[in-house]
Length: 58
Image 1 (cartoon, rainbow, N blue to C red):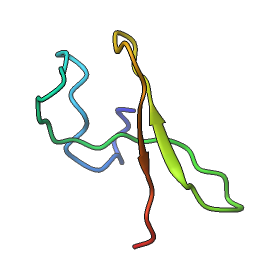
Image 2: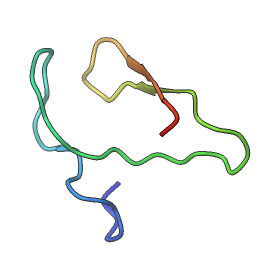
Image 3: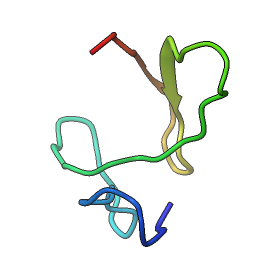
Image 4: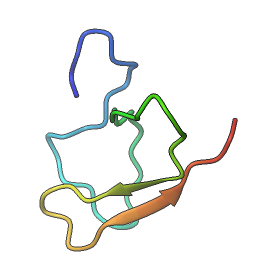
């Protein structure tokens, strides 16, 4: 998540983000070569519930 080739800015992992807060940063994750991602489930440590959003075609 902190590789030298990662697009900037990286998502801030050093401070908690609560509901209603706004931060900017990239979260990197692996996607299989076949197929296409349909949605993202994000559930970092310390978050009570997962966050889900759909991935749209760009």
